[in-house]
Image 1 (cartoon, one colour):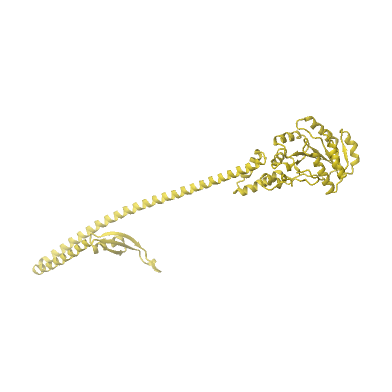
Image 2 (cartoon, one colour):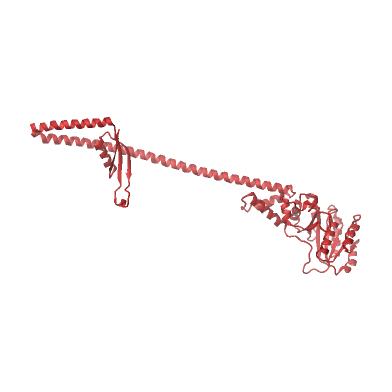
Length: 427
């Protein structure tokens, strides 16, 4: 096999050069365009390079044919000498015929070659276009599938995180209704990316829902003495709570304190409050009837606070609540601050009934006792959201005056989320 390259200004010229040198049996193997290079390339024309090949057997035939042609030419010379009259006609006719045959053969070969190349190029273009289209579609489909998978994984992780936090809140006795409400409010913002983000947002949301606390304090328009009522069911620790707050107000804030008790139903209740009062040197008055209030009040007109201990009320007896309203009326000329004392160990269902009993009482603050007796304090959040009333104090032991303090929403939020020791550790 003989392979050679030929360059010309056009494809046709290059092929003709190849056929002329290698013969009509030459095969075009490759055609490519050669662009000029260099600084002056813009002034040069583009060249076409044709790579052609011919079998060596065919080449030898060409050589023999060339030899035969030489012999014929020698014989023609003899004829020319012997018969000069035939020279011009025979030579010209033969050469013209041979040239015509060569041109016709070459033209036909070129047409076939060009047509074949066009078909091949068209086929390759179609296949390439189809391949590119298929490849592009595959890439697009893969990207879409990956995107959908990523979205599905994020949604799944988000839902698992939500379920985990809801479970943590309900395990700490936060009502499922409020736990779900908090998570809906958090996830509705669309700004949550990770579990840590979600926990931080839930923590902040709980703090906001717990709101500002309402401890005992003087307002600008308050007149002395300010009356502080403590109400609630039996056995929640109202008397002990009063003793703790009295000692704090007197020892830490240097306030003048007096205690009135209307808890004459419970055995030894009066003796218990008097014992605390004697230790603190605080005066105590026992109210047996509402008319006793008018008799006692003039004695304490210069005092800062009068703390009133009411009888424990059963949430099943409406008449006892009516008695409490009558006691409120007896102090109507004074500024009144009211607190509802509840035990953190009471079931949420019972707390709902207790708070509904006091719904007609004017605004009150919430005090929760016995936090040292439970690890689950979700009811604090439940009652706060049920009543809309402000939180005030937390009590977590029997030590007077130490085991009481103003409620801290941050500690409550951490504990319902399972973090920190919280109040329930008896600290």
